[in-house]
Length: 371
Ligand SMILES: [Zn+2]
Image (cartoon, rainbow, N blue to C red):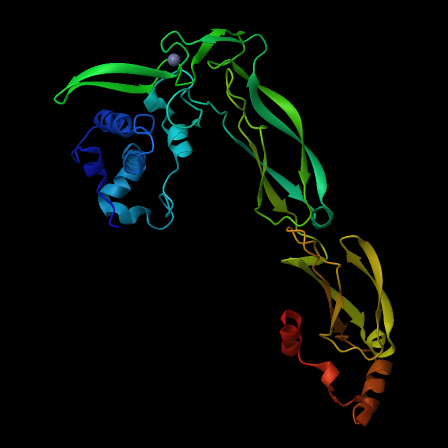
């Protein structure tokens, strides 16, 4: 579906001033507001379309790009992607459009009509985890600075809307007298305003407090994954509900182990004599060190698979493996005696390569691994 021109959506000309753009958006937002058009999908689509147009045209930078390139300016991840904006985004970004009170800086809606359920904003933190912590699951305690209701803050029923969160107006239009309702400008739809607040609280009766939050991280998480701790974001004023704490997982690089999905890879180096004579080696795993046997006559490139020594699946089904890659270390320099020894073996048939099926090429082994 072709996107409509942003100016056309808001019903303004290209030369419109910032104030005109805002006014036009406010008009559209009120016209298509979900509270006024319950269960009307077309109105909701129009509402979102207007919000998107305003988001671009109210930002000097985005507006300049749009004026020059049109919708193409935002097609490569610069705009809204394919999904468009959701209602929470719209209310949190454009709270100011809907008036003061609790509206600015808070998002969320409690369904069509009636009182708006004010929600505190979400907080985001990054948590660094070692591979061992990821493999075993861990409980992390983090210090979070979150807005909480300042002690001593009291709320009262909004006198403008009598606590309903809505104001109803009778307007004379060409179609006759129409009753319209919109979110209360004074309380932002929450139905409550501040009665008393301590001097160190902000306009919403909140203040920043540091709190230690305990986060249970399940085994098998992946770098970049986001976990939600409900209710540990910023608190909302009055009887609103707290936002969430979004925890972004960051995986620390391990000195010895490389992760690939749920499998782990380990590069094992053995000396030339160890490869010839066989040896045992201690290697790191995510559950501690283990000793593994390296058979005499091992070939460089051999992969030893330790089943279940990888990372548990985040879905709870089984565990990955630890794949130990054997690398035979060939000396780069030799002394006279060593050189004489290898030279004397050069024509010895016993040293000439005779690969068997168990000495498959690397590529065949890789094929095996994923089959
Ligand atoms: Zn009110």
